[in-house]
Image 1 (cartoon, rainbow, N blue to C red):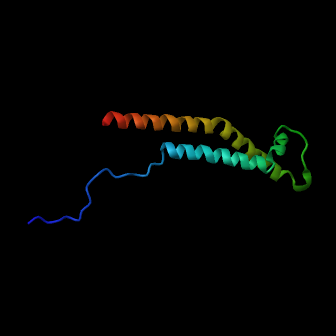
Image 2: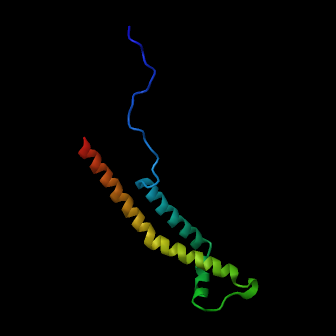
Image 3: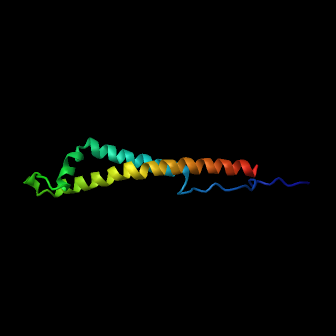
Amino acid sequence: MKEISSKKPVGRKRRFRIVSPLMLLILAVLIVAGFAAAHAAGWRENVSLLAGTSFDASNGGQEQIASASVYVILYFAAVIISPILALASGIMWSLQKAMKRRKV
């Protein structure tokens, strides 16, 4: 008699990849969302402080310097890094699809 095995068929395990097209796209969206939140919070007004113009000295200007610095970093990340991540996501996705077609 044949024994019925309860083992699942052996196949390729699907691993969680940190660098995947979806993760790159999510990172790009998170950067843009962070910049949008900083812009909505009104941190753009404080950027003029970094150019040496006057600022509100009531709180010592530390909060304004911090928010202006974060806004500038998020701006450059949204303008430079996010499009690169989105393009890399699309290229990586299309290459993965092409490689799967070749294997078949």
